[in-house]
Image 1 (cartoon, one colour):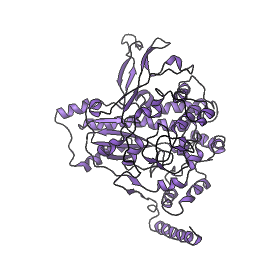
Image 2: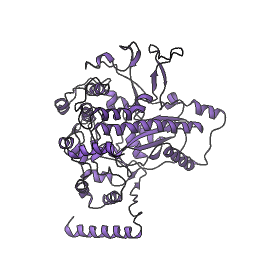
Image 3: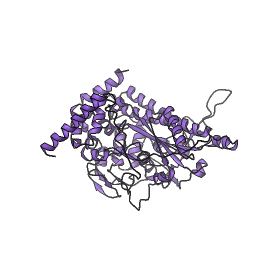
Image 4: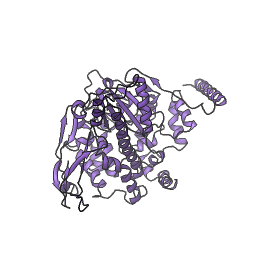
Length: 513
């Protein structure tokens, strides 16, 4: 763009902005930039075969013994296999190994305690849905009514919050009490209102026919064995507990089955309700500290609770539900299908309201609902020129190369496309192996890519103006402006970890009530 064109665009933009402010300053920046599409807005190859859940990184750790083909992981973190990195994460999480930065600001006992508290509902009542476990049953111990003590040699199993038990809906249907909506639009209106009332921040609907390509080609579940623990209790575990503290990880593979909602939930889906939850802005300013992990965990816990509430609502009006977190199907493409946002360089979804700072859940149901359409609002074009998340990624997992249809074995600046990537779809390559290796080293989630993203903004008028600017030739300047105003903090990973910005963000988090 030459000087004359630049001044012309600047003049037009200023004039339009000024007129909007003069006529209605409050409404001027309530901008809806989304363009609807009838088809998925990214290329999918004709021979696209879907994705097998056993290749999700969190499931590979139970069966994949292959040595990493990535010198960066081996030299930087010392991990040679998926199991080594994930089990190191488990060792830290269970207290067998101290945090690498233990005692430092953001990694103190109080910071770690908040992280554990944030994840507690997901961990204690949802049985690992965040790691891809579907329709999980939780191991509990019955209580001796005479002594009030748990009988720890007698494990029993109860449904998790994401249970697929639809007996209540069956009962209502049998009594002829199923609620009838006048049409699909009314049904969607009620479901969206109920979902937001019960805890979701964003809601979109996808017809199952459009969604089923994103359902895993096989559902996976880690195999478990019964162990006697040091305190005499009996416990089922997908890894030998005795080997965890030693670093000698003994796992037992996974069992895969073809997807079958009829068999496991008692119905064939007609619609998928896709839900997004805003994560705490101030928690993510501290990424990659334990407080950012706490912000993520708090929303996973909220997802579990809200999924349970929405599934209960559906069942009480006579419709069946299969609530899911990171299990059952790929969440990001389903959220794109539901019109919640666009795919981004970091591999996550960018929403208009919260940028990438969301978590996603979904509920499969036999209630036929009016669908939403995918939208675009300039994210792809912006991500092509920004690359801030790639520069800031401490594990060097996010490519700086262009988006394209990925195939296993392709080589990028961040390594080879590995089996944990859904191939045959246009996107930017993110190396999940490198990402998880840093998680294990860090002793918690990371979230740096969320924090530095220029779309990660609180709701203020000048941020809406920035969204408008993504549709103009000024787009390449936005990252510079973002950094000039101090958003996201230092980009270079090592400088970020030692920066005053990060220390201030952590102190501010605790001091501002």
